[in-house]
Length: 429
Image 1 (cartoon, rainbow, N blue to C red):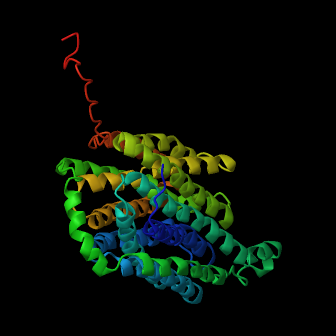
Image 2 (image 1 turned 180 degrees about the vertical axis):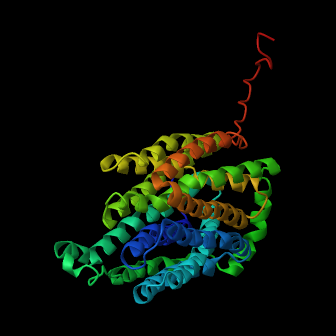
Image 3 (image 1 turned 60 degrees about the vertical axis):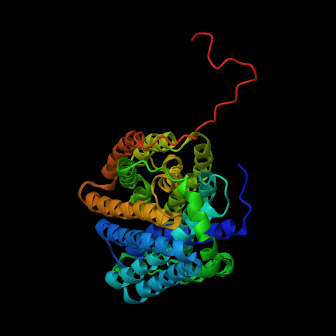
């Protein structure tokens, strides 16, 4: 498990950590706004989160196509700056207008910056060295999942500490009911946007310029022809099916973890921490899954990640307190472990530049996740979140079995040369 040495890898990895810190905060942020500033149903929460995810997903293939041609320096750095700036604007609009529609517009537009960054970061993480890329990608995605894990915890902590908690006063003095409303202070979260500056500046300096990228583009394309395995449309269809069904557990279920545990009386800090446990679990196992895939192939590990996560998803619908944290950690650990494997599989079976292949695959992952969030929100308003999480557990089992139909990508072992004078057949022939 040798660590990558190129500064380029670590710069885009820092960018991934930073941008997913803000992406991961979205479910907690929307849940908090629904409780304190803008009343929302589960369907409206699902619509806001899924619109954010879908916008990021749809922009990724185009961003990947551009990155293949110009290296993506300003797509990467500018995408991060755009996302953070628009999310800060979202908070300002929410606090000043209390309008659901006006709040959702800049939040959804912010996702385009995330969509611009991810194909650029993935392409450079995969291409910066000539060694097998799956293990390297697992570190890159670990950084993103760590950001996604820290985002909910930091957001929940800041929002919980900044809220005025007037509802405590109203419960003590019922006569004031309707006269004092719960307010939220979002200034600390806006100030937190400054942490994105180092990653923006470093990416603007270290990601190759368009001229440098063009000078090496032809060489990379020639070397890549031998890497692609043209396994036909069936493999791509199966990969799309696995990504689509997996979206209900990852990232679909995490978008409603805050809502599920808010309904059980948890505070923003507490439901922010359980969402963080989910993302951190996936980041840790993703590294091990990635390096194991470089040695044993991705197909079996993708299937195992789904089958092992299903009991934990079911447990989320049953447990409260400390056991719920363990279930969230296990769900994220097993379902998230396959993230880099799916991208690595796509690089092998999709005959395109890695920027476009990365953008298309990540677009499918996040786009399917956005649709999954929308479906979960709509269905849960009818049958409840507990029943929906139990259904997701069943879908996850099905996904594991379908993943076994993916191409066998185990590395081919070269036969050992025969010793001099040894017969070329066995004694039993």
